[in-house]
Image (tube, rainbow, N blue to C red; front, top):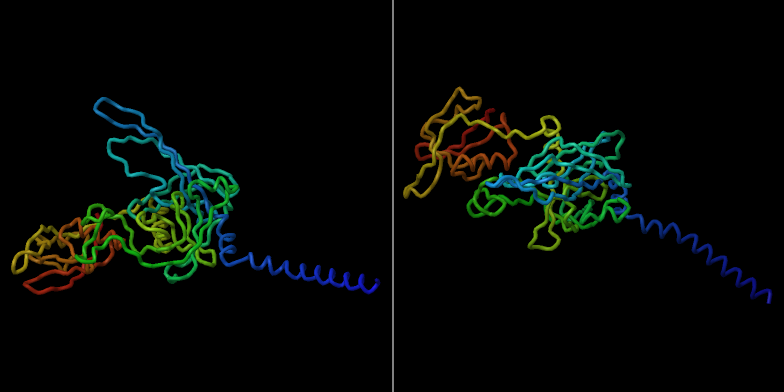
Length: 366
């Protein structure tokens, strides 16, 4: 009898010791690279709420419309309260007949505390906006290096999809996947080499959606403006849109480019893309069958702020930085695509006395 009791106690002791040994292993299995990344970045991820009154101007007078209310995501980039998000979370492209009141932006940080946010700057071309909330010692997200990402690495999206952040005790919602492509480009027609607008037509107003990061991490309405993280919990992109005709194809603006735009918005409040070429040119048909279109330079103003000494009257501009162009509007769209400003150098391909030449031009200020 004593022997049986001794054996039973021995088994119980071994079992308890085994349970104790398993606890660290179970805890370790829960603590993955993804969970660590989410834990690191979550304190800096915010919900963004917009409210705006809208009035329609008609020939009979003014008529109040249903107010605009929307929610999105953003993330704090400095401890003094600067926030990056998408421009479309803050401002819609409304018709001229709409009259809007001041936009009221509310930011909710993890834990539920809310702040009124001021708009530092909005750039609809790159779909980037910079906000500011008043306070100190905010927990911010660590910004990574989007030039160093690779296809196949982990990608984690954080944000406020479908306003679910309220249902999770004001903690950001996470989804995970991989980087499925880099340098995704949406504005070039591979057949013609010309720039396209967002509807696929040759030009118009170009939205700069180049060199995007593609991920299969799940993105839903409300994720826009939130961070895309790497496995270290550093921000590598701003989640911006999904392709509606596909499953699990989301796209993010690379953070290195977003930082450049944010710094300019912080300094100037807007992005000044006005430039001068110091030339006068008109659309011109050239080629043996006159079936090619270029820009014939009528005059060159060598006193302009642009440095254009390599251009001459009679040159036919056919490409800028390798992109085919047929109008000044297309030239300007190329410069938007490349995010160039006054003072930047570009290469122009011209037809000069039946020979193709590549010449330099320094863009001037207006």
